[in-house]
Image (cartoon, rainbow over all chains, first blue to last red; front, side):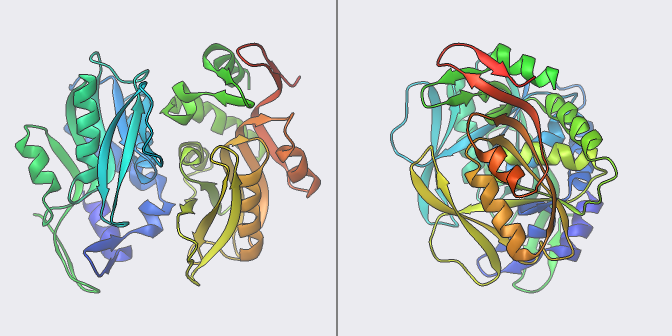
Length: 192
Length: 192
């Protein structure tokens, strides 16, 4: 989506370690109208696909997921919670996710009350890089028996392998902007 | 707001320790159309009040804040981040907040890039009980010199003292539903 690519070019900052800082409109401050435009694009891409729920992960995913849920006619949003302790109760599905930023594993959990084999879900997040968080959501959805209809992310870094690994599982992935290459304090190249 | 009170009566569960579990529409699963109705109410309450930004705290506050931001003509949303380490850089405003749920202190931070003395802000959150998180946001806003135009929360528990303590500071507080009394596995009474 050109609007998002232009915004990344204008306000994104590339930091060491392949980190793209987009704190001014996505990860700290949020431009809701940009997210609404993005959500309309996802709505067109998944026109006619049956969905019961939008599933995401706290915290930055929530704003994107809420915009997508509105575009799809006010579907429920369900967000996986990051769980601090290793002790997990029986009433949740969980997955263990590697955090690149903090160099540690953490658990994400979703209550069994809100996801089941009757659900047809769209997985949504702000970023898709190595795919650790998204693969955690996929694992939870599979354990719950929910049907994954697709993945929507605002920004995909195609030089990291998360997107490809998910597509290889046969899951459709749509991204608002796909970054092919970026250099520290330098250029950002988008796919196409 | 009757719509929210009815939903709390229907789907809320009162747990020991004065905890109201509303995971089916606010804290884990989110009903975006309910939040949009709530946001319209806040818009009416703050009609004519000048605002530059909606400020909240991750994670559950984000969905409410995004709905409010839309209702106020797509204002920017800014969310305070919960900071794990005690080490804080010079480029953030921070406040230390007591977490009742986890019985520990944590820091919330907002980058100095996104809040300043030119801002006129509305503080938004899902819950207002003891007011620990909200008072942290107020502390940050005051340190940044931003003008606090008001506080909007989805659910206020008036038998805890957060709302009163904030009103005593001269800050206007609007709540979607005010719970005066609730009993474990029992009744929930709303104000008015």
